[in-house]
Length: 384
Ligand SMILES: Cc1cc2nc3c(=O)[nH]c(=O)nc-3n(C[C@H](O)[C@H](O)[C@H](O)COP(=O)(O)OP(=O)(O)OC[C@H]3O[C@@H](n4cnc5c(N)ncnc54)[C@H](O)[C@@H]3O)c2cc1C
Image 1: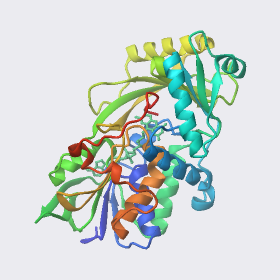
Image 2 (image 1 turned 90 degrees about the vertical axis):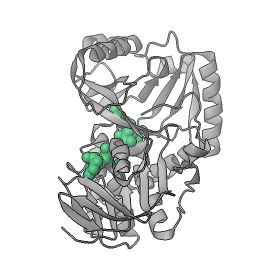
Image 3 (image 1 turned 135 degrees about the vertical axis):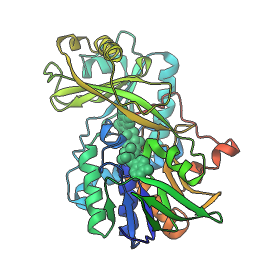
């Protein structure tokens, strides 16, 4: 292992590999990324891969629009098909208040050039007759939204980072971060010390643990969400939108020939990745309520993944005033896969240019929680 590195990145999920790639692309040298397991085995591997531009705050819209461009041009940039299936995202409104908020959201998104549109209950019934729409007032739909493969995307970015000279060291946990005179000076991994003046915390749901190594409180909680997959199921069309049922806190989309169903989200933080029987039953009931033909299939498998939830459900990005050289790329709260490609770009800019140029990330600073300047999305904000 190297004795010195210009930049150390902790974590090899979408965020860590994207930071590494953009740093190297912008000319940085001597970059080391430590991953305690393997590339793309954490939250990124366990997520639903959703990519949308139906967001409701300025900062998330900016991330969504830039990221969307990356996913559309992914093959040219990385030489790999990200399997971006643009089947649309459909949000269902089950009250007139929610429908009103959808109208405002759509007006906001349209001002950004996003082709989201409002659909009546009748239109939804005609387009997707398999849905139970008895309690649906209408919906918000954007046909260019969809989902991609977290594995293809993350490994492609990691490969490109390696090609540009980044050293990716798997199976190696960072266990200490040494801070002297208010500045990062080294990290310890696998018993070896690596001197460095810059450390990026890209540890996903372990962000708070890595923050503690440096002696600061990173307010990110690991919150489990379970996902389930049915048997192959042919009673639905091959292409269906990723459909969000707020009323039940439930969403579903195709997973190959099967269907991916979102299960419940824990309230208490933990690192538990298991599924449980009661959650599976609850998920099956929600699924059959919204799509009655689901009664003809079974749940074949499931897993738990960890959201990395910040106090206002938005990312925490950039340097921290307390420790020079300690950079946060944390707290994406359910949007990290889709915003990862651009998050890496802005973090690389912060490190190499002193500030982000692609998107102004001041509103996502670590200090916002102390200043009480939290970011608010509308009622329809949700965790993908
Ligand atoms: C059920 C579920 C569904 C989701 N669906 C979506 C979706 O549809 N769209 C979307 O955009 N987002 C979604 N997300 C959110 C998304 O998964 C995350 O925001 C994103 O994957 C975070 O990426 P990351 O690189 O920060 O974290 P991770 O992928 O978890 O990577 C962090 C890595 O850091 C490593 N690490 C931690 N500590 C150390 C250490 N001390 N030393 C070395 N390595 C360390 C870990 O092993 C891990 O591999 C979903 C999340 C869940 C749980």
